[in-house]
Image (cartoon, rainbow, N blue to C red; front, top):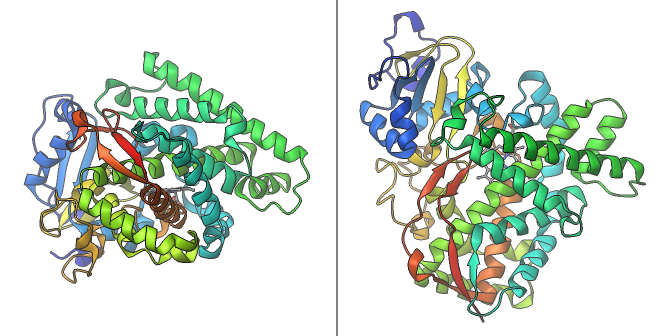
Length: 454
Ligand code: HEM
């Protein structure tokens, strides 16, 4: 059965998807917790639509791009964000754009979308380049850099300056946001038991989560209070917009707070991981790094502005390949609002549908030598590859609103770093990193490189 014929198919006459039998009461949860990534490798052997249960929770994983398109794009109205997403550590963002539903979501997206139009985003190029130059200038020749740490500070500064009109350097916000991010990751880590317990169970991870997210909330409330008291002048950033929507009662207090927290979290964590994975991969692929330096040095002789960044071909391919091999948002979830047929199989209302983005990006049916980091694979489009075999920013109406912002930041920062420095692998750290299946794709160990200033 082709995916499109599923739209009107009768679920009651379709068979359930195949999948592994689990243990009584807990299903396949113990195998999943042991190693979530290998677990997906294992279940994908059952086909493109695979069912497995975690005790009371029914799950179905989708491995075919056409089924993914159906759920995220063509038939998006019949699928909502999954309860798993709400539980997986980002539930404190409940009233923000990432998790709202229906009319509330549509209204929020319409209010915020103009801030992310191409022309608005292009205007941030100078701030991104300047902040990256400041970071690189702080590195000593031969210094070993912890990339996730360095880039998450950078991403916070860029975000603070462009969308919030706040200098994160000058307040204690950075530590607050960083601790909250760390706690979210720890709570969402699929390899830990906390991910499967309600957040009121007083495990150390849950207690830290409660404390750090409360501090995050307080910080954001302070930002709103300061902006409320200030003359907005000609400021037209996200914070000013949200405060104005609050003043005319278009948004509740909770919605403003959650929205700010959503953007602070979603806007720095993913981008900094992509920068870290890209830089780490380039340290292990010196010929690509050398070519990147040539490209950037030649193009940037007169400075790096938005137009120059747009013209950097190899930089663009490195960004695409980094997001393919290491998609920071490596999985997303939906649940059907009624019984549906997907790939010829019945999927019941409320089932957790899992879309393993990282596996779609590494499926040998669509990618030659998927494990190889090869920016040249992006030189020409592959007409045989389904469009949704690649979706680092999601797809359909709920695709990433910050996609252009993130893409510009990735180009700008990589261009500055590889114009100014050469990076070398640290001897103990030359292999492919290993990962934690947290809210985002985090490395299990620090990602380090040695920088040589040019
Ligand atoms: C490399 C960086 C980034 C990646 C890989 C990424 C990935 C994603 C993905 C896959 C989704 C869709 C989730 C789903 O369908 O369930 C998403 C949604 C979202 N992203 Fe990003 N993102 C990035 C950067 C950003 C930035 C910089 C911002 C904000 C400035 C941002 C804000 C959001 C928001 C608010 C949503 C929810 C949109 C909605 O539901 O309407 N993201 N992102």
